Picture 1 (cartoon, chains in turn orange, cyan):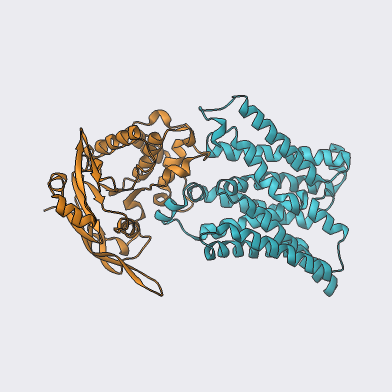
Picture 2: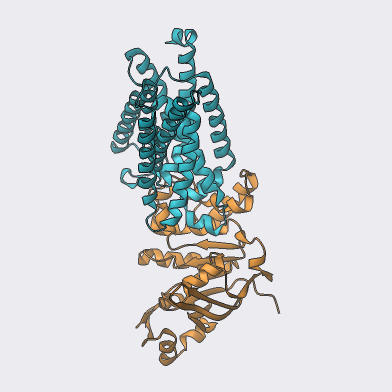
Length: 260
Length: 283
């Protein structure tokens, strides 16, 4: 059996202050294989953001480990192993006087190291990711002149220019209209076809179950991890138990919606 | 003017200092404006005033000549570190750091000015800039600062771009935190180097106005830096020439020319002459 690209082993995290201890995550185990597209879903306050912070190294787990390609993530310098697209990325682009190629190339900053300049090889890699995301024609455009969907592609390109082991997307469709959301999922499916490993964190379970091939459902514990078909077959009672309030999946043509 | 440049050392010193300030102030100003820290330059310039007043006071008390530019630089760096520290203390109200440090700088300045028996002509030059105030030692100091600033930006350009564009992503990429400290110290150095020519009260204008003008007509970050420096140099050189012929303060003249350039670019932009489909209201 092949080793997973990404593995979370028995992670727990509790927010502690003087007055109280609030557990956010308890004994989370999650394995992601190469080329998987995993949607991490859960209600507000379920620990999704905490898990992202742990994955990105912004928080240190009080218990458990994270492995990337079999190596303990906390014990080595793995800044470039994770490509990250934040829900806030779009807001940074507004009014910023930078070209698309400058923004994407900035994704190489860590990999290049201090005092090193970009070289021909880096510009070739830039052209590769521009082609991969069909945004070659935007290369010299100003980032603030792009539409929401185009901007998202630029940020995915910035995350991929490092050739990371896993692409982590944190609620990337927040504030984007339906047309661009559809385009966005088309891009992710294309990346999946190219064996890019994806972890998409979202609250929008109705849409993602049709696109991701695996779904992980978090609410302090990891209540469910299986294929999207298995997730669709979960009963109303099980879903409501995970979410903590009455819930069912409703199908609308191609899309499904989550109703509380 | 050329004859004066040949004949008078002080005019030569002023011109060279002005050209250095016109280069480094908009260069670092690009990052200041983009990081939405424009008011930091104002706060640090007021702290520099405190340092200069302290230098003047020390000179009067100990009867030795202490270059106020040196004490100004030291205070400015301390103020820079104070701002960075306060931004961490007030994480959700980071802008509070600026009025706190600014008022501290003015207060310290006023106290030491009182102790040093008030205002003199030299301090007037520091406040509003002077074409005759740059000594050879000042020129050496300003040149060294110029080299440090250019080397800093050249060597750490990609890191500075990253932290300016998306601080959250820079943290994810584990960009060294010391870059933030180094950046604000460099800002303090630029203020100290530029204030001899434009004056403490207007030094922030030389860091921000050329950038504000260039933002209207550029579409990449490198273009923004280049055009900002060009506008900065045009303002300084024209301002110094006018100041020489009209016998007026160079600081005010330089800033007024920067404002004229800004109005020109706004007009240019609003007439619909833009690049790469960039619309005027987007900046």
